Length: 430
Image: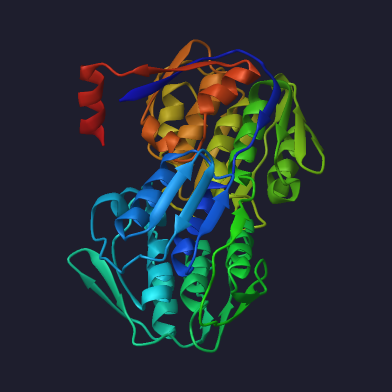
């Protein structure tokens, strides 16, 4: 097991290239199950979630090869093998296997998903959608069993705007008989990306990116080539790093309209952000940043996935900032770790109140989830001394070549093997 080491205080300058979108990848890979011939997905991020999903497709009989950032899947010989345990427990996005396998085989058995512990994140809207299409759902010994004689299009209103439910219902509905209408659908760019792949496979989908999606079922889907969109959360994370410690940092391979809410808040803090067709330049004077208030909202609002690293940046803001997370009520586990580093933060309900500016100090801290890890990296870059971050497996789930990319920008960051004592302490704390 490894830990991440950061010696803070080094200014960032130069250019970094953003990888393909993690939140698209984890849905696009299961979507390949629906085809009857080879699907190629290009520009995937080289992260652990992609590797786990690739292994899951192999488990159900797929011919899968991962060549660098390109995944080639021949789903012809796949079977609806139950997946109650094992890899399926390692990431929450394994629930997309439910919609994809239900759509192709009319049945599936998937273990309750794992991933980051962000508090209650029920899949009731997914289940509601599957049942509306004609599936029966049971929970048997910790696994979800889905069975349908046939799937029939339906009008489905989501009680809560949910990216996962929107995509999962799309996956199940593309081969259902008749028309499916998803109302109050999520509008994230990743949904458009999945719809683009499915359309290339022969699906008939209209309205992706709006709150009403219409799907006319087809009998079969064929293979295709698809290039994934850039990762807006990774792009936003590096923009936050640049705002914290950058002189002038260029973030390449980014669609600026996907991060407009973050750009607005950075500019409100006093950060100079310049946007181009496929890149963003961030220039900052980190000693004169203003405090701002932030509330996370569904897209196109401020992303909950950027709340945690942005909270770390706000320790540099002059004054009091309030961060309210309306999406996940348990997404403040990084706050105790930031306090270890000297941050002045208190939690009141679903809000964090940050007083700044403060000079953070390097410390031994633990990443409790993926984006909490990004927050601790941001804090480590700003800190005096060396920061040791445990729970590196969380960070590896969403950030490709983090050490290499930060090193290119001038940061002093490296990985080290944990001692046996550190490993034992880390395992006990999990």
